[in-house]
Amino acid sequence: MTLAPADALESIRAALSPGVERDATLYDVDSTVPVAAFEPADRTEVATLLRLAGDAGLAVVPQGSRTALSLGRPLDAYDIALDMRGLRRTVEYVPDDLTVTVEAGRRLGGLQAEL
Image (tube, rainbow, N blue to C red):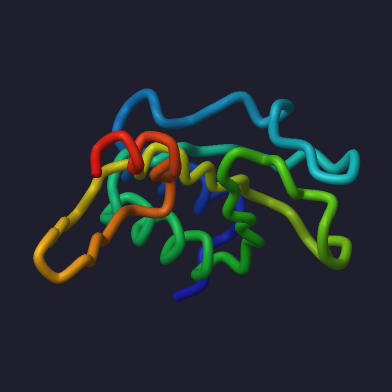
C-alpha cells in the first residue's frame, strides 16, 4: 500500500519516540531544506522510518556529522533528513578477536577512548 507523503510523515511522527524530530532548517543540503528531520534513538526506529518513507516514495538522506555534504553528485530529491548521530552505541567488542561492532553514529574519538 502506498501512503500519501503527508500521511507517511504523520505515520513516521506517530511511530517514533517523542523528541526525535529535529528542526528541518538545520539540515539543508545545497540550499535545499527537507520537509522533516529526525534523529532516531535506535535501529528499530530507523527501520520504521525507512519503511514508511519508502512506502510513500519519500527521499531520505542519511547524515552523520554533516562534514562532507558537498561531496558527491547533487541530490535528485530530499524529503527527510535522517540524522544518524542518535545511534552511537558500541554493539559488541571482542578484544581477543580484535573486532568491534558499532552503530552508524558512533564517533571515532569516543570509540578510541572506550577501546
